Amino acid sequence: MSCFMMKIKNKKEKRLNMKYGAKEVLDLYVFDENGKFVARLDSLKESAIYLYECEDGLRARLIAKDALLDIELLKFVQNTKEENLTDFDRYLKLNETHTITFNAKNTYKKCKLIAKSIIRRVESGTDDIHMYEIPDANIVNTFNSKQTGYEPSVYDLKVEIQPFNEAEDLFKMHLYR
Image (cartoon, rainbow, N blue to C red; front, side, top):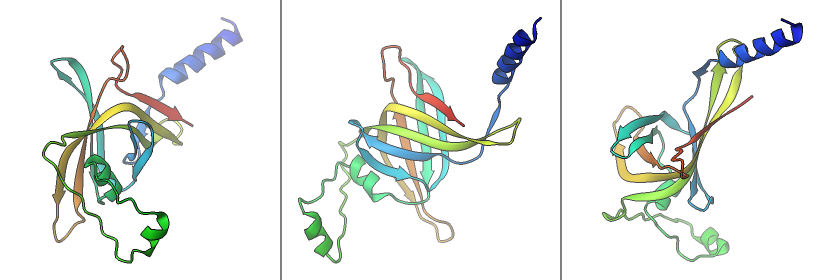
């Protein structure tokens, strides 16, 4: 075997043997179904994306527990519209408050997500960026908030990931060095 063939074979073996360890909880970037930015959730305590079987085949779900309540995300999920105030008028309002109405008919909100994290390459100990691209998802309207006197509140977020093409692909995973 020539040296050139040996190098190609070794490169292929290295690619096949790349192993990663999760280093951080996901940061979530939420966009409406047209791609307009809604919220960045960077205070998650836990996050998971998993596949499961159902009658229609394989599906995916994202579950997250956030340490902070994101008002912009809540307004988005609940279809809360801001008053038609100019930025000037809004600036003049000294004690602006938000009113978010929870509606029984509002079961989910269509969106797009990017889930980003840092992972560590086992063989080198270096960190890489790891992203999930989720082009079609529904944030399920299951508002859960638990308050205790000792720990920060936890707000649960449940997202049903939908197929985004005819091949029924659910999401893409990208690795960046």
